[in-house]
Image (tube, rainbow, N blue to C red; front, side):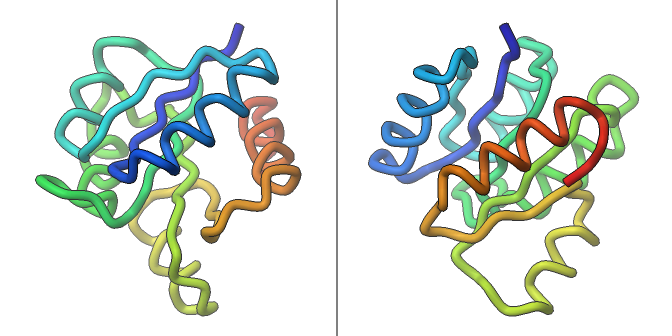
Length: 124
């Protein structure tokens, strides 16, 4: 079973997304801010990180940079989640270190395809 770390501060988004991922056979570990996300990434060794970019305490931009700069977690694929949908926003998410990007509201079939692609090592 593949483990996904979901770093999301919005309770409704966390609940909806985690239930949908679990129904598809993923184990979901949840963090509510970037600091907790970094800690849980190191502790739980997920196969992939879904990172909301607008987080309290430590935002997703900096949390992703730290994940990618740590020898322990730099290999983890990170899929950035954001409500910002301009082409320049996609570039900013990728520049922060995310391997892929998805806009909110989430279109589940597209997100699942990106997750599967990243987990298979192909890239989305």
